[in-house]
Amino acid sequence: MKAACGKRLYPNRVEAMLALAGARMHRVGHRRERRFYFCKGCGGYHLTSQEPKRKLKVICCEAFE
Image (cartoon, rainbow, N blue to C red; front, side, top):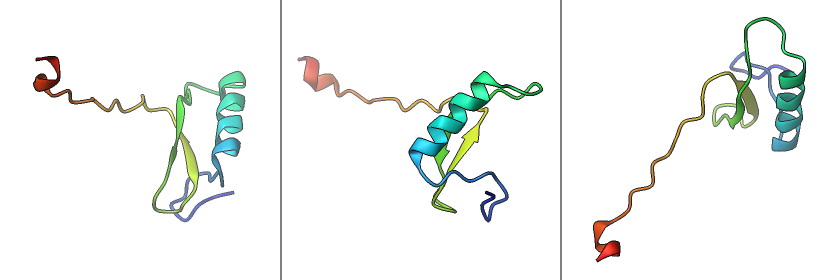
């Protein structure tokens, strides 16, 4: 199913996980799906070949004093 944004839509996390597993097993061409993400625009999930965006945890120096 296609979302309004034109990307393939997975309605929930479970379906996105299953699609990602399938894409990893049956890769076609050079594209390698790496993860799925929630799209605020359409309210569904999409797959992407981009590396995960790392969130850095800021630790206050006072915690070590």
